Length: 146
Image (cartoon, rainbow, N blue to C red; front, side):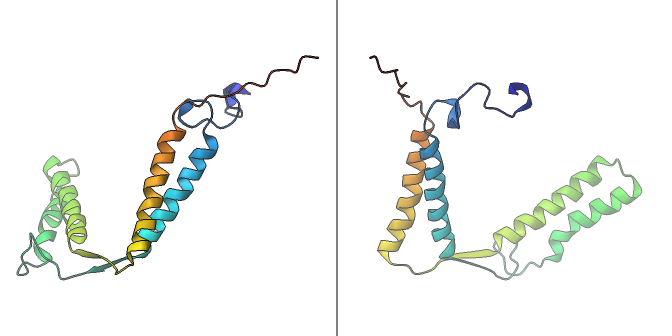
């Protein structure tokens, strides 16, 4: 079954990083990181604001549609137009970046203790993850001599 992926290819058990040992540490590190990131994301508020083009409140969203519309028009005329594909994909990218740039992200007021716990969980999880990927000494049990 080694060729079908149904076994660990002659290795015994789960071996993160391709090295012996550290499977439990690896899973524990993922849990710590996940809890820490969840706690941080739980305290973050995201909302949108007015569309600003390069920081200017005077520009409108319609200006960012122009490359997309011109690109689609060129593609309607010739589907292999490199300029049309460039403008269309650039227009979509421009709109996505505009949406991301207009998000306001705030960290809600949190106690110092809670903030330290959040980032300690993430840092500890990352440290444990790094440790789990290093080779561990696996003690081979010797048969007891009578």
